[in-house]
Length: 540
Image (cartoon, rainbow, N blue to C red; front, side, top):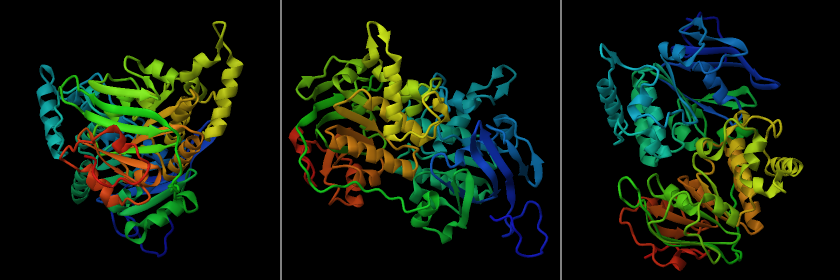
């Protein structure tokens, strides 16, 4: 990767020192936003038929560089070279025309359009009669078959779960037949099986000579698919190595400048009384009539962090949204302490002490046109209203204190929420709910798209709150998080809770095997999943 020559052999402008074709090169790229220097003189190259993986914490500059390579942004200084010739990519369409396509970290879909229309938005297939919807549907179906996803081209995106929407983002990029494909967090909401399919496609693309740039906070997964590893820190490219010469420890140390591991498993301690009791709860899908949540029972105690682990489609998100009041129950009962929550909506549950950090923070957790401060205070405005007027001084003090208390890295409360990295944006969503002074905090995939350093900060914050008595229930498909950041693991499979584990004694293999359970085992009585000790037998 180094631009320095170590010999005097003349190289083609489209070759690197190993003789591989360099199809895209960034030369001296800098990017400034106001006083913030997001990129500082970066030299970077992409080779045909190789996967270059970019590592770095949120805010390190990875996504900014990818936006420049794909025409979303233009550099403040430096230039791009495509096939050895200097080019200007003034728009994403200009990049697509030159064979460069990107899968964005944050979903970039129109929920009101069908799958096929999202895939071809801005580059529609036309015939003499206008848009050729039949051809678009045909190509969409082919791409879906390639991805092994049974999603109809005529399905509206708003009816898809987040993981399925991420598949649509990938499908759109694949449909362009790009020769340079940029993947920014493509697997953050995918199941293990879907990641396997995606990696198979990536290897096919490599054999076809496609150059792939890949960003992921799933470090082990990224190392598996990488040919080269490039590390960014504070807007600079600080290291580049062949993937065969690195390991996970090297990646973490190089990313953060130190060992960055988190393991919050504690010695057994007494938790308080039952804060949240889920009794025989079922949730129905209004379209299919099926039950994504099927007779689930579970207790969460004061001061306890319970991890709800499961694969995509297990019913975790549906359960979380029902607990928060977003979806109605088809059966069962939810108690907050001794208070029956049936018949209460989202706003009332927040007042009573139940807060949700949703899976899709950009769409459901933040207002993109508002500032950091306004997003933080949104759920707590009633706390600062007196005599019908908003006490702005009290609001400002609370918001400023929360920014400092939860460690949001921002220019201040007035900074736009869009200026924050993924980890800091997630802290704002969590901080917003903590300002409501909840009794129970629900979090759905709380570290999706968040780097290893920010993950540790988020879980540290949750354990601090738990020590103050907060009951926490978080859902994840990351088995590492389940094992290192909870007091108890409850596994969901096919809409049911199937096993409970003590994370101090459970193994990765045991937990993952339980999640693959296809029997739909009954979870048993509510108390069966309320113990804080090890319950490594199946609940039944």
